[in-house]
Structures are given as structure tokens and as C-alpha cells.
Length: 435
Image (cartoon, rainbow, N blue to C red; front, top):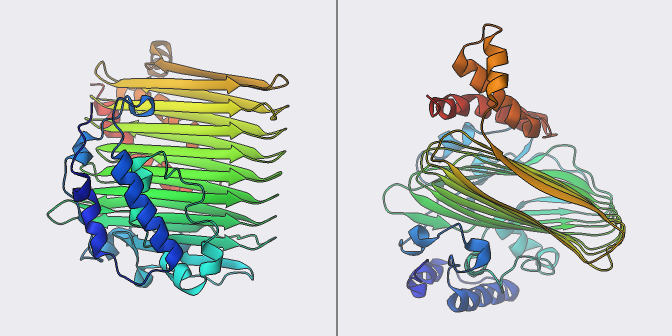
């Protein structure tokens, strides 16, 4: 059970935020403060947080992360993606000098949220805070209390971006623990399309508390990628909320490799007929890492389609959580939903808690779900060894094949190549846990 800490301690850094924010931002901050003061941190007494204890975060004192410090450029340069629109954030703030703003087609706005709030508030105000669960989730409320900067993407009707948008969040903590609360807002009007990549890296002992809101208009298509590669001393909490209009498509690809403790809550609501969503997720953890994914797909209108596949690889004493909820509401006739979670445990001490859930209130639907937890197949290892492959390489090949099914689904080529390289780098350590 998580003991509630001094709420004021976590809100105090908000006094460091610059004054002069527009009224709707100030109102959101005040609402976030009030809700966090009322809700506090979620505890393990709450069913959705039963397996993830936030006590290590709640009892720590975090200073608001300072403006960019030495080393940010080097860290950011290592993770650039070729051909992308690059937006780099250091400790939660936009770093213009490290970013690459390419020429955009008419109708596209891509940049920092702080800049959009100042220059085009009319585009931001209707959507900021409209989807994230500020009233129910203390962590989301705390992010809202600190809304300052992040990503803003607006695509006018019919605007389709060929280049992916790479949002690289770099956190650096030299000394005392720090926290940043980045915010992402994506609004895709009718018939527009883009790929958005959120990637989180860092160095030191820090906490990233991110919230993203994504509005997918009629016939629009958003491919959203979230890559979490935080320092293994860091904490990472993220909430992503999407809403889909008629015949829209939302694809979510989540990869979690880093952090001491991480949790990603990803939700979409198929709010009009014919909407389609695809949820893919891959998590790899070893040592004492804890990784948690909570997903929610809400079929609220007819003829919606959802596909979900999450895979986990856990070694050492790592722990994992997968909780996937699919709601099919009474009006959502002819919905088609399939969900699967597969886990590979590579040690006796690794553990995963998986809970796929279907709640169906319509009668004309096609829905299925399932979960598996297992070890490497001895017969498959024997087969490979019989062909001259030594045991570590045989294990590595099987694990790579298990994970690569999801990596291959990443449509952005530069990101897919990056993920393949990271997978190859990470597997020797994971396979070593088998020795």
C-alpha cells in the first residue's frame, strides 16, 4: 500500500512556473492542483494500480527540472531520426537549437506547445485538457498543474505529412532528483494524416510525468509511436488519451526498454462509426525493473475495429503488468475486437501479471482476447543446436524472433531500423540472465 506523501511538496515547484499564461492555461493548472490535492498519488488499493506501487516516487522530493544543461546536445544527437521533423525537448522545455524544423505543407502546424499557446491560442484552447483523465487520475492532474511546454501538432483538413514528427524528450539530472511534466497535443482534422514519435531518453535520477492528447478527425489517420528508453535510475509515468471520429484510424506502437519503474496508460475511444485502432506494445525488462502497461479501447459506436498485440520479455527479478480493457457499448453493434498479450519469462524470479478484459454490452459483435506466459521452447532450442548453433545464439534468435514481430510492424523505416539495433544491443544482457 502506498502511503500518501506531503501533497504540497509535489505542488510546490509550480510556483517556479513563469507568470502570464493565458486564462485557459491558468485555469487548467488550478484545476490540476485542486484535483491532485484531492486525489493524491494512486495507491495499490485502487484496482488499476494494484501491481504498481508509486511509493518510491511519492516519498521523493523532486525539484522542477532546470533549463538545458551540459550534455543535452550530445544525448540528443545520438537519437536523431533521419528524414524526420525533429523537435527536441530538454528537461521538458523546447530546445530550438537542437531541433530541425522542416518546411511544412499548407495547413500544418508543428512546434512547441508553449509557442502555440502564445501565438495561436484559439487552436489550442478547445482541446487542451479535453481528453486526459484529470478528474480521476492524480498523476494526470499533477501534470496538468504544471502545463507549460511540450508538443503541439495541428493538421487542417486534408493535410497529410510525409515526414514523421520525432519528438525527443531528453532529461538530465546532475545531482538532486528532478521532475518534468511534458504535454503533447495532436489535433488531426478531417482526412489528415501523420506519424508522431514520442521518444524519452535521459541520464541521472529523475521522473518524467508525460500526458498526451490526440484528436483524430473524420477519415484522419494518426500513427503514434512511444519509445521509452529512460535511464535505469529514472521513473516514467505516461498517459495517452485519443478520441476517434468516423472512419478514422489510430495506430499506437509502444516500446518500453528503460526506467526503474515505468507505467504507460494508453486509451482510445472509437466515438463514431467505422473507426479503426491498432495497439501494439513491446516491453523488455531485466534486473529489478518494473514495467506496467494499461490499455483501454472503448467501442462507443457501430462498426468499429480494434486489434491489440502486446508482448513482454522479462528476465532477472523484473516485474511486468499488462491490463488491457476493451469495452463494447450497447450502440457499438458490429464491432470487431481482438486482443492478445504474450509474455516470455527468462528466469525463475521474473514475474508478470496479465489481465486482458472484455466487457461487451452489444449482441452483434466479434470479440476475442487471450494471454500467454511461458519460457523458451526447449524443442526449438534443440532444433537450432542440432544445426550447429550454440545455445546462447539459439536463445538469442528465438527471443529476437519473438520481439521482432512487433518491431516489423513499425511503418517509419528510420525508427524501425533504430528499434532493430536497440533490440540487438539489449538481447545479450537479457540472454545473459539465462546463464
